[in-house]
Length: 180
Image (cartoon, rainbow, N blue to C red; front, side):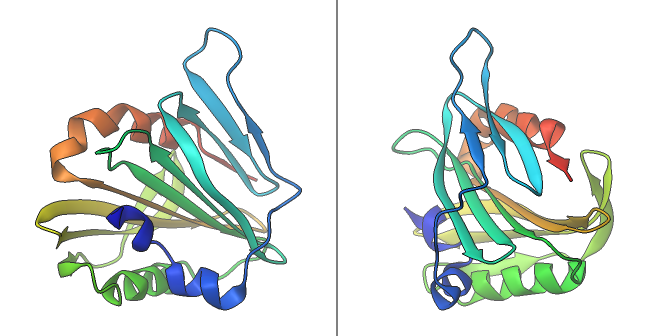
């Protein structure tokens, strides 16, 4: 669907991909309502009705994962791109926006200016955006933040019509997100 075409397609295809051996997905086997994903750089919980749809080590020290709400018409999407180094937060946001702008399926892409914010209590830089694709209005945010040695970029997006269905999943992912 449209959501998969929007995320870092040129970056991933240009660098080539390989499955990471240092990440771990824990599928819930008990009565709690969340699954867990952990890598060397970050970790988070996600609801049982969301799933990891892509997971790739793009290059040495660069990791990508996509988590999506399940269902044919579902539109909730969170992607995480991590770097085992410190890089410019604003530059990572700008590169992500350039990828969105180059997508031929996106019509009328608008964005805010990059601003200071936080992501689960971690100081971050962020930009909000909205667009229309195939007549459906979407919105999202791109967050970039760092720990002492690592940089993480989180993109979340959804169709406006699915906001209520996606809210709990987005909240769980952000509330549980850890950067190492």
